[in-house]
Length: 431
Ligand SMILES: Cc1cc2nc3c(=O)[nH]c(=O)nc-3n(C[C@H](O)[C@H](O)[C@H](O)COP(=O)(O)O)c2cc1C
Ligand code: SF4
Image (cartoon, rainbow, N blue to C red; front, side, top):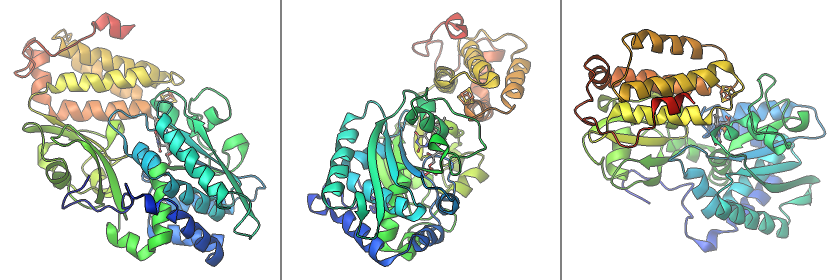
């Protein structure tokens, strides 16, 4: 999909069968002309930041794995993509799998990995088939297997079906699942870069991150940097929801949220009430914040996150208490239950939002919710409860009127008017 703001780079060859095998030409060139150290240096210089959510500098991660002295190293492409509304990794895997596989081969060469896994959402059979086809092509062309490029570099790759659930996409849960254990996060440190699969150094990167590696190697570091801003180089694939033309769009980092919503998405469905710019682990932005740019740093200064650029626009037709409750239901359903603050806190957030939604909030609701924020402020393994707290806190601030109407006046707000759609019973939420 395209508009005046879009800049197809990762998606440049979408629908072009003639370009299918071209990424392997870049692989051959890199293996011939560059040392592993040169490749790591180029990724550092490119400023690429991870597209899986945290925006961690990719080059720094690669340097750590490359520096580890180990006979066995692994690389994992994280395509779990379990967040509702996020579809960009599936687009890349289904439509441009050769670009991903080529990026992984280059990454493996750079850090010294001999085995890789592409971890794909369990329902995305089309992606598994496409990636497997690209792996087969790479093997046929001598880009996978033993002595790749005639330089003694050996690397092989296989598809791995992801564990079920949102948390199964957290990097240590990914490792656990590939090792044959339940897909639950494990405590960090140690980090996967030094103690990953079977205790060996492992590079875990997102599908979009690894696809960008091919772009950097093919088009050059300077070209990649020229696409975005010093804070966030390159393009960003956004998954845009709640607009007239929802879908996945590729834009240069640094464009405004307003341009993405209005120019790419054709505008909101009604007057905007709030925007979630970076998926379930970000926080609501107000309609006054639409000029914020799509950069990791800029989003942070607004108290939110760019995350995996999973954008959700909420308009005036929606009761924002109900919308918040739906987020809380997601977190309460997805917690893996290992950490007490998360197991209890996500459930309490849901129960307390339900009470507000149903105009059944007790008089001491405010002190109750403060206690939940205190509980979820404690240390947990992967911080899912912090993500729930971030959405909850921003909703209470931004939609304070609606929360107050529901709490103080025992009255549903002007939007839902006592009819905010399907509502499970509070007891049901308590479980
Ligand atoms: C609960 C949770 C779910 C996550 N799900 C995904 C996911 O589906 N895909 C992904 O790439 N990263 C996901 N992440 C982030 C990964 O842990 C990890 O940071 C990422 O794969 C690293 O790749 P990057 O540096 O290229 O962004 C998730 C993190 C958390 C805490
Ligand atoms: S924070 Fe929540 S989801 Fe993450 S490991 Fe702990 S209990 Fe599981």
